[in-house]
Length: 402
Image 1 (tube, rainbow, N blue to C red):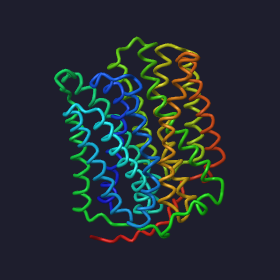
Image 2: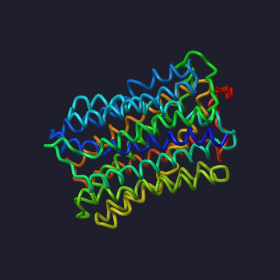
Image 3: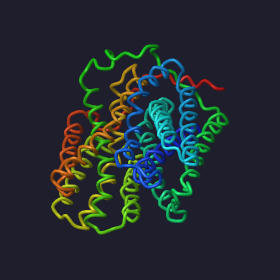
């Protein structure tokens, strides 16, 4: 079982790396393809638009194909998109690169739809929250290492748009190869299957109570505030800290690394701690850290913003585990909607961008302060279990071998 869950955890690393690299694409494409800012930011928009168009079909297919077949399909789609993006960069075709980003983002969305409930289904009941946290930690490892890899490549192999030369094509090709490697490992380890009990996803059954709505809103806010802070904190270090852009990007590894460390620790302690109190402490701490940064408005404040990555560490696994508990027989559909809620990663940074223009960068951080306050309310009222309890994704772990 350790080998099978290890294969699934590798998937978390893959999509974490791809998501983190995507956050660098607008600036990178702006320079390489000589675009306007509106054209460049479309790469980020496409990456977060794809889940809206693909997650529900993925949830529908999941209920018919089962987890294993859907996982292989999602990995192949991700590999195809990454390889197509490498080709688009080699050929110096912006439209082809846009298409590649959409295909790759669709594959990443499908991976998220299938892997979270798949991991919960294959793990023992007492280990589900801990394994989701461990998987999230590996996801954070991907988000931590990916910006460093981009910085190293760009520092050693400068972009030359006139000669259509750049180093990231090799990174995308490597990620495509890694996705194929995961499929090969899954087949070699005879990854067991798990099937959803119901044949037809039902919105009515999923939303019989109001709790699911609040879980989805919490995910929307969490993803939005995490991405918004990642983007605006880099700008803080440029404007307030006096750092160069590449130096500011390197500092963001501390932000993502905090989430990495926190999730590893939480994965080890999840079965022995008060989950609701832990979530309340983290949201309260993040709110105070960002508020203190606004008040200081100096380099020390920038350091506090970086530390919020540690406070973010447990929020995703806790919110997602609560969502799965209330999903009943609709784990596939609930997982699809949860990934769609990640559109907050495009909406809330855009809202903070408007605030930056209206009230300056410093005071725009009052938006994350308010958002953490809302997450604290969710933790207080929606996180019902005082200790980690078995998730109920309501799937049959059939353990069907190849």
